[in-house]
Image 1 (cartoon, helix red, strand yellow):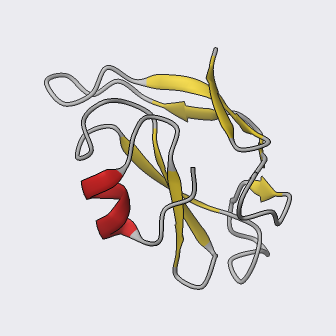
Image 2: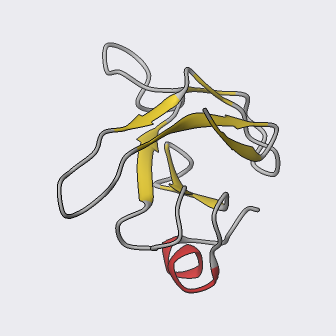
Length: 94
């Protein structure tokens, strides 16, 4: 579910929620229970397009679809990692 901003995502977000930041050039996605260690921020198509890597976004803030998949690498003692897709506003683990 779309949240208003990072503060709203941190305080009221659940697994699968997201918010857009920096004039919709970044999306923050909550992929796990812990708001601090299980949230990733990804550049999406917009002002960051060009030579910089980014995820393609369908432009729908309510039901976003990102491609390619999202892969969060495991970091010992911090995060177990995660791999999945955000499709039509639903976060799905692989």
